[in-house]
Length: 171
View (cartoon, rainbow, N blue to C red):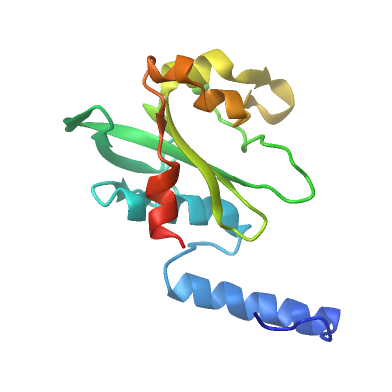
């Protein structure tokens, strides 16, 4: 680990910019935005090589690939990630037009503060719709990746824990 404790704020920001540029060159992130969402998309597409990642401008879903329960059926995946820091909130970014069913599965990942994978999951749209909360302020729905989403009761509705799969490609 590099000791950055002696760097000034300006030096830290320059280092941050250089790291961001290098991550874009490595195709791990695709934008200069917060890297959490881009990293989530990258990891899911690495862990599931049959998924095809969509372009940045594609609304409502991020990848197309085989369904978890039927490899012959192609489905759309909305990919979201949340990095847990001092703020332990598990709220994902807003899900727009949820009732319109623009995606079949929500692929969600919780990152630890150091960007290691804490938990990852595939959640069918119907379950997301049951658990999400409408939020007029963001013109969409709020969804929290709470621990109970991994409970056995949701497995019968098609929820799949994919933590080990994502951890295996991101050590």
